[in-house]
Image (tube, rainbow, N blue to C red; front, top):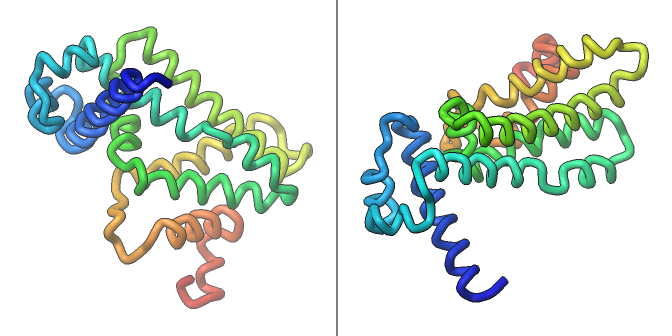
Length: 201
């Protein structure tokens, strides 16, 4: 990458980080380009040099985040032989990403619907790819005797549990991401009664 391209990429990432923080706190509709320019310490004209519109910025944020989510995911899971260990890693990886990319994750969860049709479909396709990988991991663990529709339902239930943290989890909580991941994993594999065996986990 050329030096000029590196500076361009670095500046775009900085603007995107400022935008994601605002979108995650205020919401996409309530955030103006003026707000973003102040947060990014760049003139509004400067913002438009890097992004043609607020929705262009939103797409960049979500597309970049989904690339991080999918990066080497299949390779990482393929390197694990045990089916249950793959399920555990899928859950832990999902939860681990949240504190590192909290603003982007919340923006995806709440604001993806604000994208125009074409970029919206790009993000949805990447989400479907993630869901496909998750379904493959769960299907491999559950075995061929579990019918496809049930695997699909189980996949969405598991991912919904993980995604719910975007709405309520505070990274400053005494429950850290690895502990939270373990709670989700135990609920899935042992159910809530599993915590009684350890006096609350």
